[in-house]
Length: 372
Image 1 (spheres, one colour):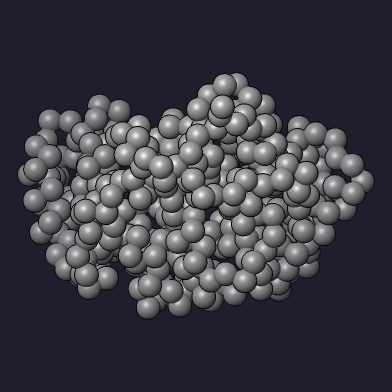
Image 2 (image 1 turned 90 degrees about the vertical axis):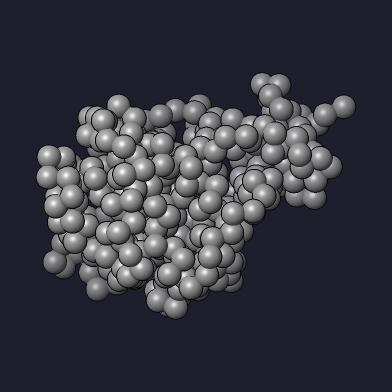
């Protein structure tokens, strides 16, 4: 008989696998390896995510990894930028690339900006523009305007970035560096070829170790890849199954452990777009009632706060010349102990992000807008 798992078991297991129950002395490379990359669409959230997961986190370790090329920022899962190890860049990109290449020639892409052009011809131009050396976004736009003077150069550049396996090079992504992107082909930057034969099943079981137990649609939501069901079937006895409270089949690595649902979950501040929140089709294991409002706020760089393991708060930081204001909105009424823990963790976050500014923590009323 298949074991049935409660939502709270799924919650605590997710937090444990995401290193959100306790900070551990892990390097950024180790965290990236275990979590199959960290969301890095913007610069600051990545550092918040690592600070919340690791003990004595030194942000310069990320900068050193990007500089020595053991870590890279690259478009991967869901077509978004992730921080991954150099090895994962080489073995995950071949899985993702075919899906990325379909995006620019759809009618909905930039209001049909590329419709009517031959994809192979566009790619050939991109090949010549990139060459083997890093190229800035500004230079890419200038070349795009020369090659396609009747098209939006921004759309042409974005098309090349989807069509070609490329990554972002430093200085963007270094600690406190939010400069404009500079792009390079993966292979010349890393001095090694892509690895096209990395099995999809290995990627899927790594997802389960980081986000499971999970349904097949959960894996597909995380990866946006085809063939997930077949990959799960092909794993054979390397996986086991459970059911959730709604009777759906959950897959997990056979040797992965579940977490006691009574395990205390500390307050954590996450960056916007953190994968712990966005990597399941059904987010109810961390988002109360699978509600969307906190996630819609993320577009305005408002970030989630798990309290007792669930997203019961959002926050935004407003730094000015002398002060850093942390404005927090509860998702429900908090207990006195929860409020005190949120304030303490918030002050620690400000000390990490804004050590030269006077800290200010403001806890607003439930439903308030932290941006005003």
